[in-house]
Image 1 (cartoon, rainbow, N blue to C red):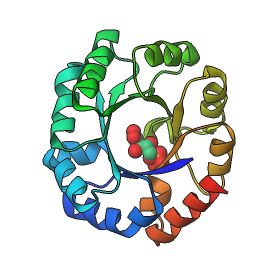
Image 2 (image 1 turned 60 degrees about the vertical axis):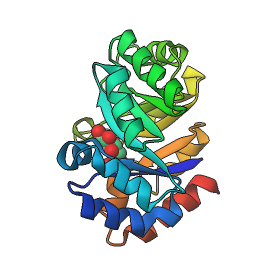
Image 3 (image 1 turned 45 degrees about the horizontal axis):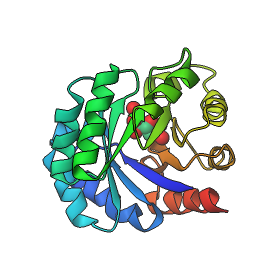
Image 4 (image 1 turned 180 degrees about the vertical axis):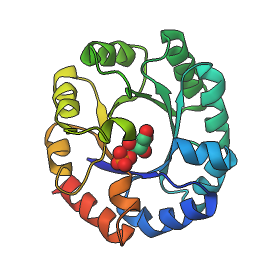
Length: 209
Ligand SMILES: O=C(CO)[C@H](O)[C@H](O)COP(=O)(O)O
């Protein structure tokens, strides 16, 4: 299973510092949505230039104008870009069309889709995304009683390639791997750790052993 770090910081220097600290332990460097909003799409080019050997994932969470927004990220150097799984089918199709044009991948972020999630995962998979990200966002994670168990259950049931995001930590990443995820996304467990490099190394170890 691959490990994706979410660079959920608010400026490019902080993102480049965090990326440099953890890159050797991760497969995918994600520019988080707040980073792109704060630093702009040029941050994608800067992260890719600093780490040409890594896959660069841009979490646009596009809700409309899928082809236009995905193309912006691919032009800037993105290898993968997200579109909202909850968006209109034509928005997903548009992002997928841009992915085909640039030879890059589109991921459907299933954040906010909680009712009939397995059904929607299968629908967006048929629209041509590379995989779906089954995702509980930071606000959902903050609610009492939150666990990643329902994400893992739906990933197992859906029968299509998926990643998991939702507060993954060292003590939950093994369950993510065992559920069959192709990618585990970790943000807070890395950027909030006293030593992000050590945290990323430990997560990568659990992801692969
Ligand atoms: O996209 C995000 C929030 O919308 C985060 O990047 C994603 O949830 C991963 O971070 P964490 O491991 O802290 O949940």
